[in-house]
Structures are given as C-alpha cells and as structure tokens.
Image 1 (spheres, helix red, strand yellow):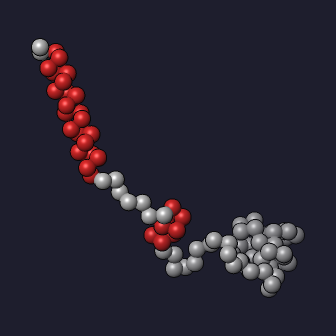
Image 2 (cartoon, rainbow, N blue to C red; image 1 turned 135 degrees about the horizontal axis):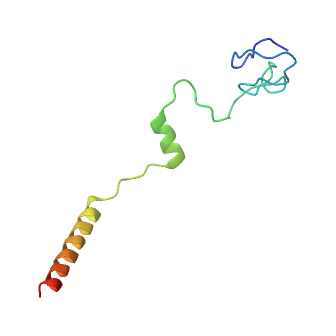
Length: 87
C-alpha cells in the first residue's frame, strides 16, 4: 500500500483499505489497470454552457407577449373593481 494516494495525493493512514479523500483502493485506483473512463467527471477544460445544454436541453425564454397579457388582465380587473365601487 502506498503512503500517499496516487489518484488525489492525500496522505493515507497506516493499514488503510481505501483513500479517505477520494475512495480509491487497490482495485479501483491504486493499480495500473484501473481506469476512469465514462464516469462523467469533467475534464480540465470544462464548458459549463455545453454541460447545462447536455443535461437540461436548451430552454427558450417565455415570450414577452404573455407578460403583456397579464398586465392587461390586471389593469382590466382594477378598472372593473373601481367601476363596481364608484357606481
């Protein structure tokens, strides 16, 4: 067993079965045959925008016309209320 984790560089306690920092052990990270392909871990050149699009898809913003409809509805309700009160 190594004194430091070859995966993350953390100092390993004596007789440790796995790294307390990253969880690597002899089967998953200390042997030369271990590999971490397809784990979904971002590389150094991580592009947040492409990650968000891949995970959630691109969402288009709501049309501004809907906002105008709600303002018009609110205005009509206020006018109707005022007409009802001052009739």
